[in-house]
Image (cartoon, rainbow, N blue to C red):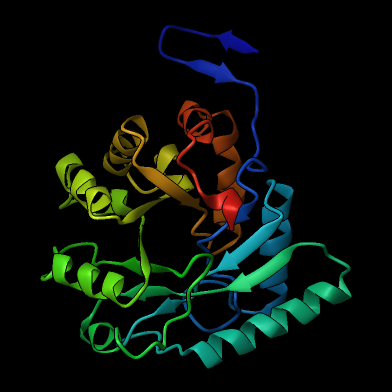
Length: 244
């Protein structure tokens, strides 16, 4: 049921994230990046996301050569710690881990080494700098694809140097675009919200993620339930979250 309050303000009945099944972008392993800082916080966040409708979480700690020097071993050890704690709580949430890889020099040197953590059909989640357009993007994507990876670009709407033409160029090259759910609420900025709207209206989004770092994010996500952009996005046949 739709309730009309004014010409500009449409209230939609709440719609949770259960249609997605899986959240594939978050930072929920304790004390290894800028996300959860202790095990109790990780558990609180996982249970909060479960309450929002997610039955499976593939968390993605940062891997960055300058700040978060995570390795598959560090991430997997943290994952197992969290899984044991969830089992003690008798939680039925599936919990797995990959990583969000920052595209820097070190990352490029490892493309042929097979050291990356992936999810699903060998999807690899990558992120770019927020300020400067990285060099050699096409070459990096080509190298990853040549090595058998399916490239997923994290939160493209947050890169202010990209426009709709760039987004379409990515998808034409076989890159999957992952939208942050909080972007549609204006959490990051009105400009990011506008870019998110463009991506949704042009049906360019293949994955959505919470990018949850803390309880504030988890609480804010509930605002999406009545957001028209989320309702529109949830009907897209292009979304792949529920295949993971």
